[in-house]
Length: 128
Image 1 (cartoon, rainbow, N blue to C red):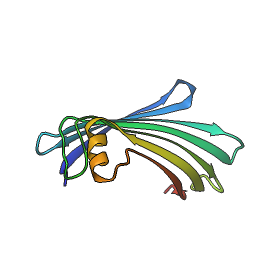
Image 2 (cartoon, one colour):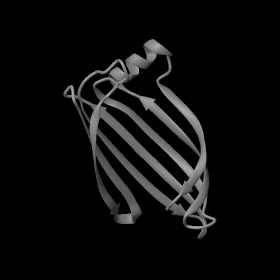
Image 3 (tube, helix red, strand yellow):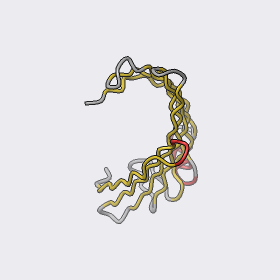
Image 4 (cartoon, one colour):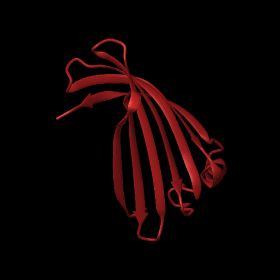
């Protein structure tokens, strides 16, 4: 179990409407992690919106208990298509691809043999 403090820095909207986020993780055992995420939205209509996503993580130390290796840990990319019935309620359907790298990939190979994964995702985006 990682006991950590998570600090996020939302850099905000960059030119061309990219949303950029950076996150730092500081653990009690000296574990340090960095995450970065970039999103881009494509408006097909006023209500039908495509959301592109790329995310990556890197860690300072191996933590086999949670399947994390040092260095670049994983990269995830995906696309979600949502329909906004109302700005506060929007169901979505999408696909996400994830690949592990470095020592994280070594740990996954030893456990299951798979270092990449493709998933279909569905849900509802609700704003309060």
